Amino acid sequence: MSARLKLTFPTEVIVCYSGSFSKVVAPGFRVGFMIANKKIIERGTLLKQFTDVHTNILAQMIVYEYYKNYDIKKHLAEVSAFYAKKSEYMCKLIREKLPKEIKCIEPDGGMFVWCTDTSGKINIACHILAMRKALAF
Image (cartoon, rainbow, N blue to C red; front, top):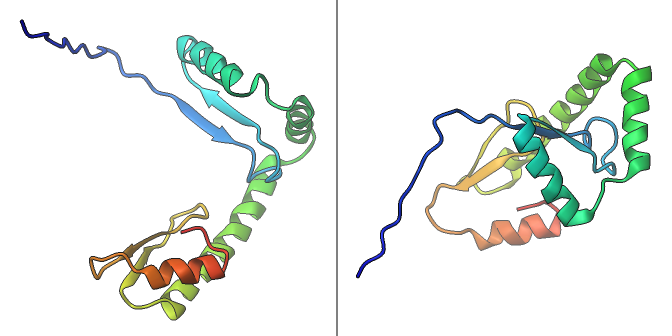
């Protein structure tokens, strides 16, 4: 006798948005947020509690006070400009210093760069170079 697997799909669209204040307020603050319906928030809360019981309360209070007392839009503009310069410089160095087979997709915002090896093989030299230069690869 064979078993059958019955797949069911939700009829509603579920949207969940999550983010972090790590790059906005301070990199050491591991405080994030989630915007979703109540059921998703409840399950997310249980998962969070299962992994580390609770986010650092002092860090949460600092983030709260920061948003309450400072111009966050101005700060975001400054932080974005800072990271954009770093990202542009990193992409410039990738183009200039790495082998031509390594191509990068320059980010449209953010600070991570996706690189590919167009030769079709893993380029061990690039891994070694990245490690020597303390780059995440």
